[in-house]
Amino acid sequence: VNKPDHELIAECLGGQTQAFGELVVRYQDRLCNGMAGVLGSAEEGRDVAQDAFVQAFEKLASFRGQSTFYSWLFRIALNASVTRQRRRKRVPVSIEAVRELAGREPADEHPRARPDHGLELSERQQSVRSALSELSDEFRTVLVLKEIEGLKYEEIAEIVDCPIGTVRSRIHRARLELREKLNHLWP
Amino acid sequence: MNQNINQELLSAYLDGEATSAERAQVESWLANSPGAREVLDDLRQVSGMLRELPRETAPPDFQRRVLQIAERKRLPGLNPCRGRSSPRVPAAAGGWERSRWRRRRRWCW
Image (tube, rainbow over all chains, first blue to last red; front, side, top):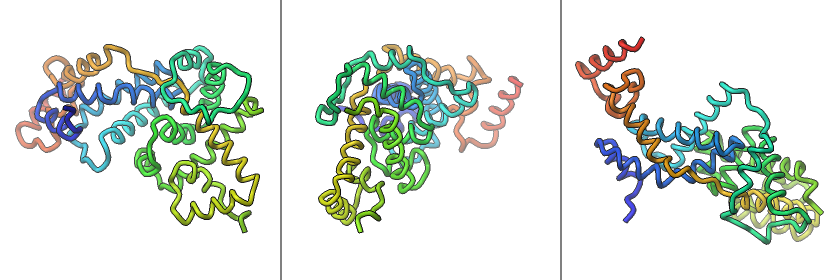
């Protein structure tokens, strides 16, 4: 039986590091995937996710349970990614990085939502990754949280620390901008 | 009247985040405006393209590496410079316990 997050957190604070290990296993794929979307690189996504888990371990006593553990963790990861980007001026995503991200099996397909065009799936995915990487950090982050993480507006607002109305507006504008960038995929 | 509807409502409608009053407003707009239907369809397709992106996963040794680094930080004897905010040094710790920890940190500087 899977223990709820708060029990694992209490056990970890009591000195059982393995309890934190269970939290890592529970969220590692999700966080690596989310951060890969935010950073436009699978490798950087994994590095930032690792940093975030270690920081979460160190700061665990400060987690108040006002949000979900994952929201809290994602926020740590976002801050870590900002620090990382400041250190290394962000560069546009290389085609290799895009291919690296595009070369895996999709886990969530919505066939009815696909436009009917002649491009192969992987080519379209490369285009989408590339267009996503060109959005501003603010737009890309909310879109990843909505479409890739599947979070509600309220949770997104908590993570990015802004009002729900701002989240709603950013998501809409980000989609419109992405639509423009992907114009070549429309019939 | 419908011209004045905020387009952002279309995304909120698509995401199931519109209130019931907003939903009714959008549905009436969609019924009367081919342009609005086209925008909604575009938004839906963009959303679908993002959701079909391949999912990244953590490498097999991810958990082991995280715990290894975390443990190293938790055991200040191994690396005192890196143990400053470990759960073993709780914010609530006071008096001798805290000052001893502070002294230990000074060794690093």
